[in-house]
Every structure is written in structure tokens, then in C-alpha cells.
Image 1 (cartoon, rainbow, N blue to C red):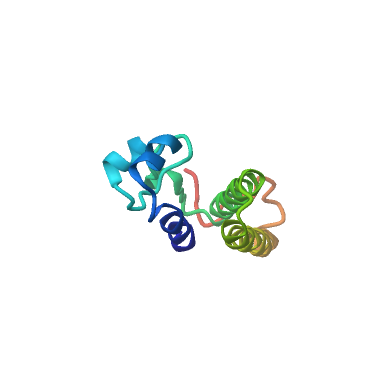
Image 2: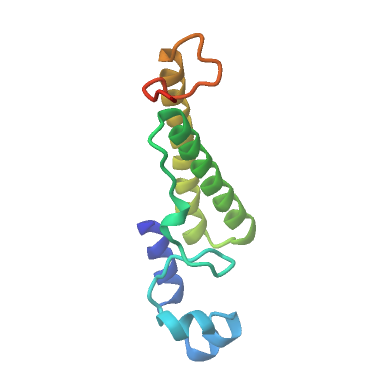
Length: 131
């Protein structure tokens, strides 16, 4: 998040009011000036709803893996649209980190599922007893 915020700040810090209007950045500017406010490309602000936790290691690791893939896809899309090397280089770095994180979460998932009861076909949390 810090790297993305720095990129946004660097790209916007010297914009004139005319450039802000022309770029369509004016509505954002009215609310946040040039401050960084985490928001999706579609304008939806980031909330805790993007983060899920069920307390079940299998469920939570799948959620973590999905989040890494969503971030990687976002970075892929940015790289398709942006050609500025000062933006693309750190985005490529972040994209590579998402791939590594996905792999590590996958390894953790494998370790968790390897330790589950072999008869546990649905790979649910054996610590939870449904009654």
C-alpha cells in the first residue's frame, strides 16, 4: 500500500487545476485534495469488507490465495495501461511479490491439508465439532 501511495503522490503532486479537471481527477480532488484515499478504480472506497477471516485455516488460506491473485491481476491491468517506467518498475516488483505470496500460501495450504484426517474428504477444520 505504501508503494502505491507514493506512486500516486508522485504522479499528482504538481498537477495544475486545469490538469486535474482534464484528467477527470476533479471529483476525487474535491474530497481528498491530493491526499491518498484507498479506492477501487470504480470509485468504491476500500473497507474492511475486502478482508475475510473465518478462523478455519483451509478457508482462510484459500481467501489469502484469492486476494494475492486479485492483486496480481490488478497489477497486470495497470501494466497494460501504463507505460511510464517510474510507475511500471515498482508495479512489476509488487506483482512479483504477489506471485511469491500466492506460492507461500499454497505451500501453507498443502501443509495444513496434509495434516488433516485422511478421511476428511471435505477438508474442514477438525477442531470444530458440529453437533
